[in-house]
Image 1 (cartoon, rainbow, N blue to C red):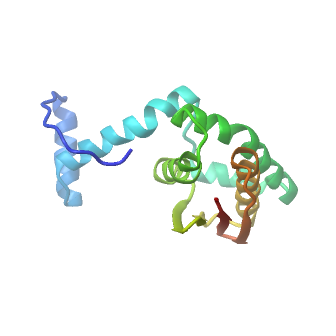
Image 2 (image 1 turned 180 degrees about the horizontal axis):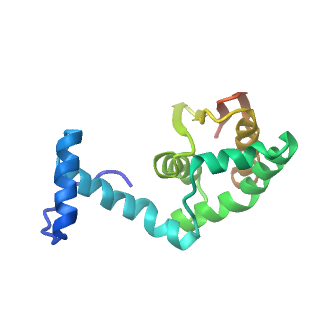
Length: 177
């Protein structure tokens, strides 16, 4: 959701929460208002949907360990399955439609910001798109993301991707006419 004009609202919070927010804000050099807005934005953009969708939080070390146990082909197979099944479900659930906006901007920005699976960048020049997933998790993750992106874009947007990947990053290029 893009930032909108603000409204003033008075809320009541528990004293221990207020104490924590004040101390944390002072330590980080930010206002309590910023912390509260950040928490509310996360609730609105992620937490409400994530709980209903069935997402669970796991330590990154566990996820990395699980991926290590897969062969290269199994990592790619998992990516294809996610691109064919979970990505369409996720996008439809969150955004209520499958669109370029949801697929290229909404989904990866949310995954990057709240799922913390990767850093996300995008660049558009006319109808030519470049998206970058910087994950720093190794070659199997690059294979996984490559298969996921190719499958999701082919199935949902009828678009083929050109992929460049390294052990820690996937760059996808495509054109939308």
